[in-house]
Image (cartoon, rainbow, N blue to C red):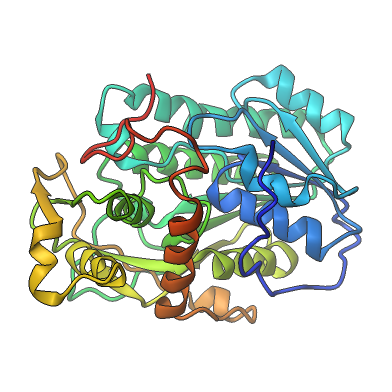
Length: 360
């Protein structure tokens, strides 16, 4: 039985129908950001047919798509991007002309663990399979490859925000696998003039994010009466963008972006891990003097980038702007997880740990 909970703050951007877009494939569509994308496209563009392609790995959930299951312009196909036969079949059957590629393994802790090979398999090889199948298929008009700000590597507090032309300097197995995928995508543009656009985004948060990531994990821990696990001294910072704004950005790029271009999706809402922890603890009604009692400091990752910082001027020139302030987005997110977080994905006992590694 799928949850019928309505999407929260679906992206507000809506463009006139593009004649070059009719049949859209969203890879990884049952995951966090991709399910926001699928719901947005299905409901905002009823004349687009949207196919969600997902193998339903541990961090995906059909609950994320329950609110649109009855929509006539939505189709779910279970499949794996590393399987060329399955990819080719879905392209042909649904006459796909547009792809938003979001399928990926994305949790850094797992990439440091015993599962690092799978990050190369899914993120790099899977992207290569998808590109090669699309090239053979020959009818793709637009291919959005969704990457991450982590491919640029660490940015010091004294450095300017990085432009899309910055060199790639990934520092962990996850970001290295995404950088490899970016290189493959760019190579297909250069070699075959394949119609690609690369997108690199800051940390996205909001309802439906699997609780291996810091914000939902901390909320679920607090909801369970447990302490928040803070890596190292908690001074590492990240920039956070609400999922609805990320979807608006992807919609803008889909309809107005230039083929062969790279776009950063960035925000200036930057928090250290300990600051984030304190915001969430206070949201649960604990007093300032009691905050440390709800924090457990753990060993740090083998390497933990101090901060990321990207410049979104190029995207803003297309008309995009951030609409959801951090305080509002956090309030909506906290409320959603307090209602659904401990039941949405089932048993989270292996996930709500200092270093979640997911199922074997």
